[in-house]
Length: 161
Image 1: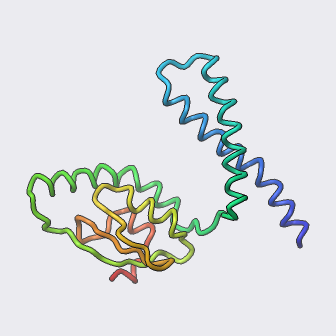
Image 2: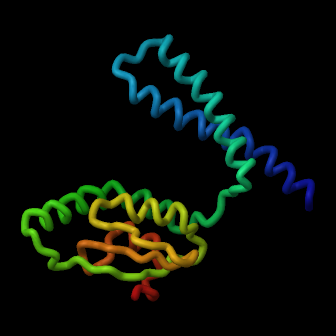
Image 3: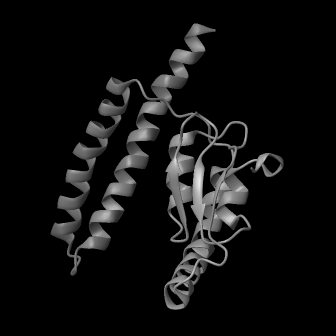
């Protein structure tokens, strides 16, 4: 049994490094104005060093990947939630009143990691994570009384308070 875990850990290393490398290369290439072969090569080389460093830092900190339940749905709903959140925020600024604004405590879905969940919840302009006093119950300030699409994906529907 221990041999399998070790094999999985060894196999996960190159995959994790490749994911970091691809993401960092993509961000660098998108950030430069004129993409030439030399700049692409420099971006890819620098990203490889950064990817190896990122993996080493994650391992040194003892942080593991866990709690991804609801992450896929939340990320898929985020592109729609951001413009809707911008519209709600703009409307609240123009009206200068807080008709639907509310502070509420919710409970994360079973298996959702509070670290990524708080980041995804706060990515919408109409939602702010005020506090995360425990592992599973973020305190949110939202401009709408109804939960947004990202909040629905990340939180347990029966446990909103």
